[in-house]
Image (cartoon, rainbow, N blue to C red; front, side, top):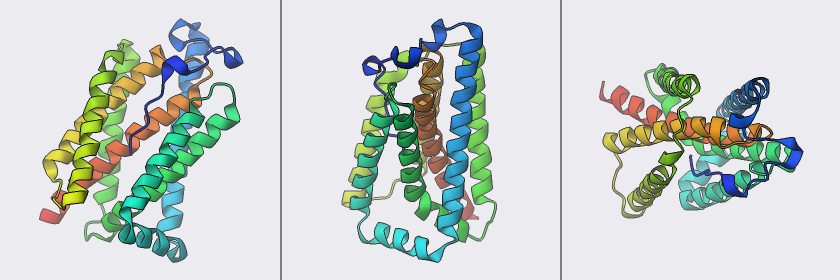
Length: 244
């Protein structure tokens, strides 16, 4: 889930010879964008592979499901901690190996946190639930990405508002878990809109805020938003499928 917010002002963009992508020559900027989205695709494929292995290996699936059912708060806190560590590692421009370790840690954390929802989606009578959610997520992400990359629009001004909205959403989610009330369709739809805003923001940052040697960190920020978008799109599709 998306709690990754890179601190651009504390990143050492000079380490490794990186310059901001917007200031780089066209060939370097194109190479940076290509590397960013190749790493994003790689993270998604690794995520898919981990989910396939976990969901089809009872020796792995049972412990994960047991942990979530027994102590979901511990898992959530551990995930938030792992996400913070991963974001700090991936924001390091000084060590490419550290950036990769951060991306790998975050991908693993996302894979574990997604196991319950994907398990229940798989067990539904409609086998198209997960593919439909994936296609919708891809269409939303692709459309928003194309708009930013084609127009070159700068959405960095959205950062403060998106962060406040995300903190409010996290507070609502904690309240729902604490007091036992359900977060329904409207919350999921609001989260889809919020993650769409984050995709605009992070894609804009790929052009305007990252250095050309920070493609791993950029891909992590995008992956966080795409994964959370998929989570809530999947929830919506599951809601409509269960009503049929």
